[in-house]
Amino acid sequence: GTTVAAGGTLEVNGSVAGDAWSTAGGRLAGRGEVKGAGGIYNYGALCGGSLTAGGTLTAAKLTSSGLIEANHACPGSYVNITGEANINGSKVSLLQALPGDSQTVLTAGSITGTLANSSAANPYAASGMLSAYGTVQGTTITATAVAANNLGNADSRQAAAYSAMTHMYEGLL
Image 1 (cartoon, rainbow, N blue to C red):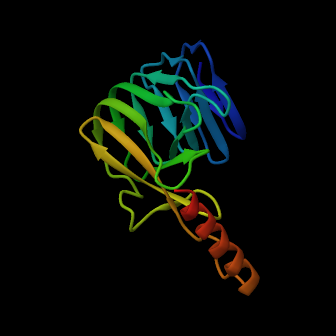
Image 2 (image 1 turned 90 degrees about the horizontal axis):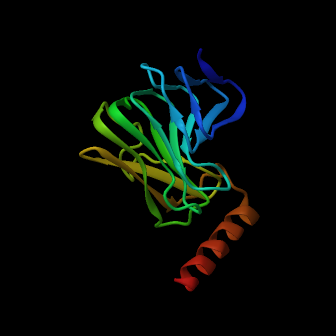
């Protein structure tokens, strides 16, 4: 049968015999294998590993227009597609990352399509103060986190707090 992550996070830590889907509001994650011939259909979020443990989520095929992410705090977390990964319109991001952090989020036998956030000029707003963009090099997709003010129209106190935090971060480098 088909496994569906329709709301919240569904972790595959073992294997599922059929295909796996993530829909809007759902996240498919884990350190296991999706064995269905159709593989993974990602229209929500897809994450190799979990929020607490690194690992690889493996499938034969990927069709995605959703978010593909990895947990930077858990090295070795990524999605491995042994065949074709169609990523047209997908975005990539890193969880628990700092500005400048980069990590592989996906490897595949072949990659088709274009990321929606394929340059620093068009990043995905991962949080109020962090964005991410992705690069495709051959059969690997890497996400890079960058500092960003995604707070929208900030009042003077919020702008001052963002500026102070940015200066503190830069002072740590």
